[in-house]
Amino acid sequence: MSSSSKSGFLSAANVFGFVLVVVINVLANALPLNGKTTAEISDSYPTLIAPAGYVFSIWGIIYALLLVFTIYQALPSQRGKPFLQQIGYFFVLGSLANACWIFLWHYELIVPSVLLMFVLLATLIVVYVRLQIGRSNVSLVEKLCVHLPFSVYLGWITVAPIANVAAAVIFLGWDGLGLGDVNWTILVIIIALIITLGVILTRKDIAYSLVIVWALVGIIVKQMDEQSIVLSAGISAIVVLVALAAVNLRSRLS
Image (cartoon, rainbow, N blue to C red; front, top):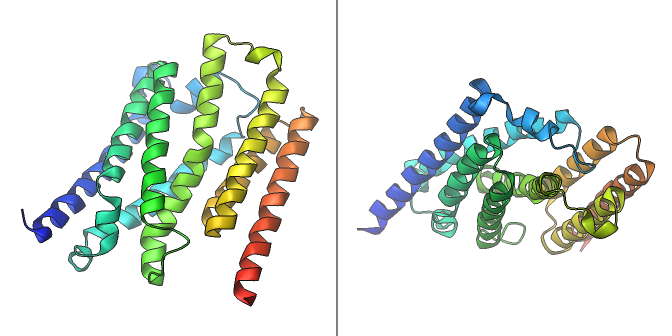
């Protein structure tokens, strides 16, 4: 198979992956699968790390950005671009994991769904690293059509497995080693903060960081009765914003 044919096949596979994910997600809530929407199942496993319902509207932004990426990478003028080979089949693999996760979640196979969520996370990390987001020198159009969608997608899927694991813990009835729900939630928020600061320092990724802030604010809104969680999430959101501003300002001045 020639290089052009390989690029064309890869581009078509990406289109298939995107369409599959969108169709499965729409049907999952329109039918809905197993008689419950995705949100209804989430609500049946309440956790202190869960953000307010409006936060999940970010999926609309993610799918809109992925639509832009899908159309852009399918253009004949983009067939030979390096980013297609850098992404490879990892976007397709992630799309399959996303679609299969929906089925497991809706049929309340909570523990297996965690494994697929981490498969999706792994594929996005590979794509993010291989595209060298925040480090590579590419055109503004490519940044907007390729890098931005994966920054936002990875930002959200950095947060999503945490909620998925928390639901699995409730499903299994684990007591959290006696630390209590509040302490575990604070620990998870701190871990998310450390990861985000790492991304800011090494990538200066504004989109990724703002997604984390979006999730943290959602946790504050949802968990107003737990002041220690509100305080932890609030301080973390402020630290992320300050670090993001400082790093990008320093970069412009240097």
